[in-house]
Image 1 (cartoon, one colour):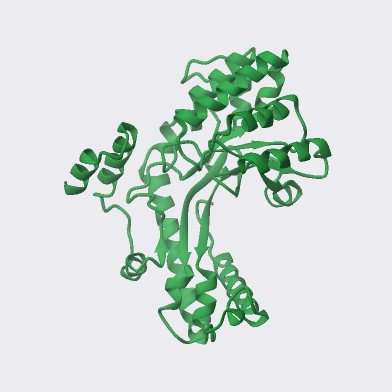
Image 2 (cartoon, helix red, strand yellow; image 1 turned 90 degrees about the vertical axis):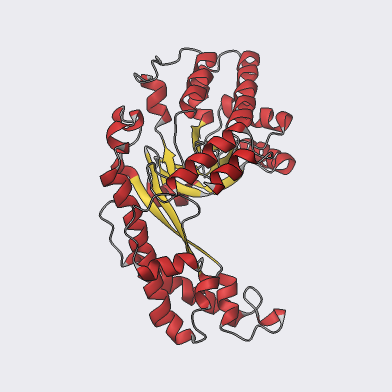
Length: 355
């Protein structure tokens, strides 16, 4: 009750932030997940971190709707027909964005927006005006830096207008990634580079690499996460290697006992979060995104994150001087690679029922 009252009285929060905070406070009052004592101990020590996803998962962390299908078919739930011009196109997308859940309650992925809008670019001046208003609307209403758009890899009229508009608007939202590949024209790449030098976006993703791992129907969401369109990620839980290293001063014990145990506990915790979402909440049975085929359970994964590798390495070596520390010496870098290789080996041993 005190936390709820603190949220209500906080003068620095907007009304929307208070509503989200109160909802999260209510969710965190529940204890519905089956969490073993050792896992809870690691959570308390900030070794296993669920990144404030909440205690009762009722929506996936990252959702990547099939916006192309939406533009082709419209939505029965939203009573929207397929758009026929640039104004209907941007309006339909803006409406849908308000209904895409996430942990932050803002969509983490808003589509390959150049490809979505390019079929409707008939008059350049009219399209540019619509695209500027579209981007301005996003910046003012989807006020979260994890809101992410893609462009490319091919050059389009809409893509060029988006870059031009971003340079003029200088807005922080949405974040943008250019899928850069062998078919991306040099002039479009240079246009993107000049834009990035001005406003720190777009970022660049290796299209061939992501395509080889995820297929062509992928997207970059929420900064740099490659996920499948029509799916996403149920959850993201992060292992803090810096804090885990404090559990022992023996590198051998860390590599052969502590790290494998922590990976197993975190993977099982991830699985438990997914189990509750899939089996005990009606999200995939009731949400219109699933009912209308804009998302599908079989295109979702889960994300095993990590942080603190440098501190972990430095814990096990003589790091009294900078030249001996991680990132500065061959020995420490090789140890970092050994830890990551061991981590990957342990993660790959886990098989998920849901992913």
